[in-house]
Image 1 (cartoon, rainbow, N blue to C red):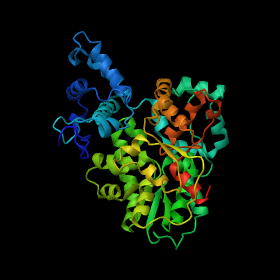
Image 2: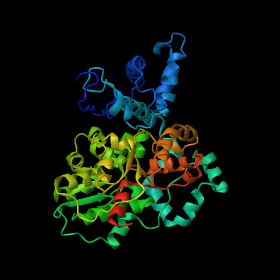
Image 3: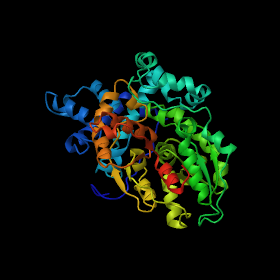
Length: 446
């Protein structure tokens, strides 16, 4: 592979069951090897805060070299990484199969995995990762839960900040009393037999966010897919494990991968595609799981059968053609391309999908939202996350479109909150939608 070539990068298996993977000394040696190459390149300086922290450590060392940096100071570099994969996918000229073999995100993951094995996940960080449990409990008393987590509730949010480290001003997802999976079974949409793609079969993997927090995303996807003649059902065996991956809990990720893949395998054997509604979940199922669980046929089959929702719709358009009924949507769309969608190396599928709408006016916003799952809502990160997202927010606001859309619902929520800090009073309040909700509007479903 040539330096800076256009070939797709490859990733090495995550050898997490090997004792050497969590060996502190070996990790330090590998960090210094990769960090020294990063120091000589510095191409990633503006992607996130990890690289500025690393370069500041080196520049403030007595010898102005990595050798003068204490290993204990590397933790602040690791803590700033959101595992967005943008350095690996879009910037680094030295990723495998290049002989330098640089994979910064997976190096950060290795450090966290060693921390997790030796120290465990901090208690409140662990509670934030339990999305299925939290979703079920939050849904039991959604009114009370949403009141307690509402931004501006000084009684509860200050307590959450002090006890759990969740910043009082961070906008948090709402909970719904009825899950998307349950709603889909109560009123399934009719399949359109006149659609060009009639005969296809698929399963929508609900994802924890659409299932518990925003069923509207799932309903929009279900309506659009059924409109296009697809025999579709909804399944949700459990979370993809991205929250645990962020904490370095690879054993838990592997356990979840095997469980979910086993439950979805019968659908794959029925020749059904698996469609995810959130790009982080697609990234896990297509790319991360096979690197963590290398010997499971179900995981391998699932990786091949999985599509991101925007990817699947574009595939319909390219192969069979879309069902009739798409109408223009006046006002235009400012579309944020989520990092975990870009990391799937499939191209800007959300933009391709929205361009199926007649006369659509799209402005692409291709910058980080700086949310990073639970990373951006924490007290220690929220102010930086808000500051780092300002240019992204400004670009979206300057487009002056009616709709703000992001493939990542959490990123969209974070950007929508950023609009409140703008000087233009007309841009104070904005709602972020998933691109599939925009397409559903064009079909007249919303």
